[in-house]
Length: 115
Image (cartoon, rainbow, N blue to C red):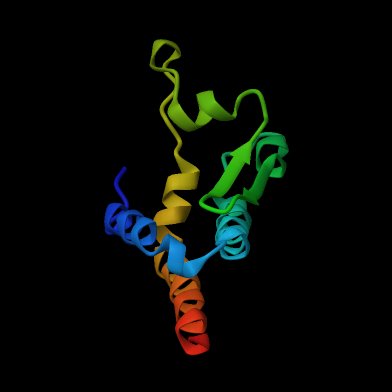
């Protein structure tokens, strides 16, 4: 699945990273947004998979992870076992793209207003 504009956004953020400084806080906001919105889209049997989604960030990355042992097979599917992929996180990012872009735009706006 391809998220329109994501490659361009990543390139542009890389170019202006020095001007923006540390993006840890806005990256965490974006990761938390996706993690929270992913809950209703997460495939469920027991709820463990949905409860295992975590948001974190670094200076350069928004990270959404799931340590549940079966998260990867559910997400990517297991064709040999007839299990189709269920990429709920990608669907959530696609749905939230405008809001995520707004978070970063607000950060850029705040920085440009300070200078």
